[in-house]
Length: 246
Image (tube, rainbow, N blue to C red):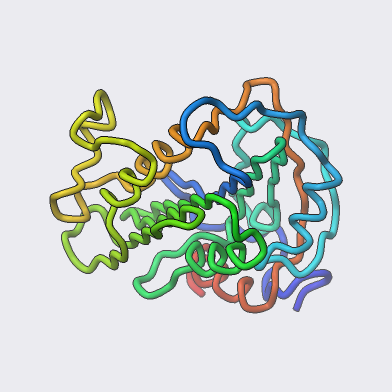
C-alpha cells in the first residue's frame, strides 16, 4: 500500500495507453419508454453520496472541479486511474470508473457492479459498458431492464470465440417496444443480433436502449470528479489490467 491507496507503485508510473477506451454505468430510476427524460441540473451532494457507496470505491480522497460530460479524462499515469466521474441529473446517474475495465475472459467487473447496484436500485434501468483496447479490443456490456430481461455480453470483437452471452437482445428491445428489423443508420449497420456475437456492437445496443428509455442528457450539464481510493480487490485487478510488466 502506498500512501492513501493499495497501489504498489508511485502515482507517476506510466500506464498502458489505450487506443480507445470507455468504462461507464448509467442508471435511470425511474426509466421511461418513449419521450425524453428532462435532465435536471447536476446534484454534487448526491453524486458524492453515490460514489461513496459505489462497489469499487473504499473512500473519497478529494473532490475536484466539475467537468462537462463531453470532456474525457486522460489515463496517462497511475494517479489518473484514481479519478471517477459521476453525473446526477434528476432520475439519471452516470458513473465512469477505470476499475470497470477488464481485459481477460472470465473477469466481469461491469456485471459484478451492476448486480450490486441492482440490489440498491431495484426499479432502475441499468446499462453498463466497458471497452478497453490495449492493441486488441475487449468489451463487456450489461443491459438490465426493471422487471424485465437482463443481457450480458463479453468478449473480443476481433475473434469469433470465446464469447460469453447471457440473455436475448431481441427480448430486451421487445420489452422497450423496439422492432430490430426497423432500425436504420448506424444501428442497422452495427447491430447484427442474429449473427455471431463478435459482429455486434454491444455498446451501441446499450446506447439505443438508453435513447429509447428517454435518456438524452443536455450539453450544458456538469459532472463531479472525485479522486478515490479503490478497494484492495479492485486495485489489484487494475494493476493487472493497466500497468505494463506487472
